[in-house]
Length: 389
Image (cartoon, rainbow, N blue to C red; front, side, top):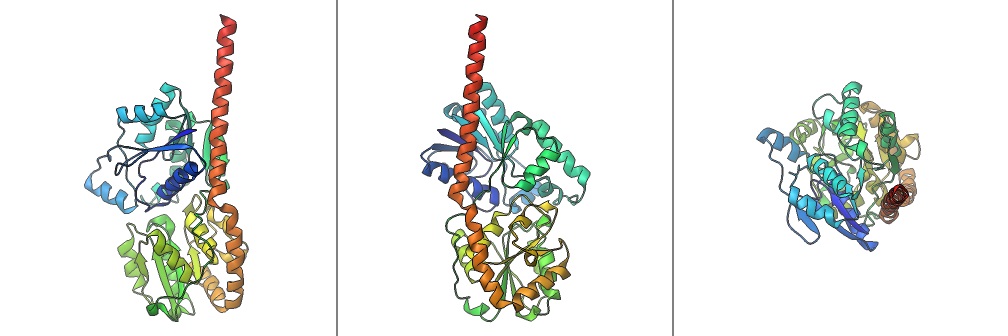
């Protein structure tokens, strides 16, 4: 199968969607498929390069701080790439994808899409994240301008599939996890010398409003063991300086840093607890990776987040936005050291059902189904034409 992935950013693994795209690319190649990409960035084998979309300085600052790049459609490049493919898979619904979709329809190339952009990812940045009406309008906008043209849509969680159904999406929705990289396995390492004796709590994610790292920082301030806790916020984003200011209230200021793949593996191996405080989340593969690596999670039970599905019991859930409730859960796990160590292995084993190879295999099955449906439709059309003749 010749599969083309179209995504605005592919090179820099600084956000979940880009990492997912890279892993899908590699996983499909391992299954024996020819895979190419249309994206911004550096030229490489199997990649068609398009330019970045021009943005005003203020908007560019906001977008890049979120770890994103927007691509400018190039008609000639898109036609060459799509003309090569048996199937085109669109990762995000921006201008590159919109133009690519029009060309795929014109050329009769089978196309599928993924739903990775939750409306709340946009509205929280604009200060309107809790407005149901605004978020609903965005779901409708995405549908009318893009997703209505697809018969197969990849959803990383049951939660987001439910949101699409509630908002009138009519395609077949394939619930498939983005998958845990095989590098994320149970392993424990000794803490760095400067962190010896501290209880390390890690959270991975962009420093954006919907991720709610502020809730974690406040919870640590309220904890009975505040002087023993070291917070690590692994990521980057617009709220960096805000979290630095909030962190000054803590006995041990938080470590704010973006880690490489290898660096993150180390951090998770010497940390003691994982917290995921986000109000909105399509899946949170970072939480799954932490669990697979051997960390018990404490997750916000937000109704706009899929991440609570990973909690095995109420001890790993706290009321979304409630720092005091989170502080109580943190204190519990700090006191129950033996139970926490037991549950680390239980959680790690649980995460294995989300292994990357099985998830990529399910994506392959979705692509195959889309191609077979198109072949059946083409055969029916040919039969009708012949009968009419």
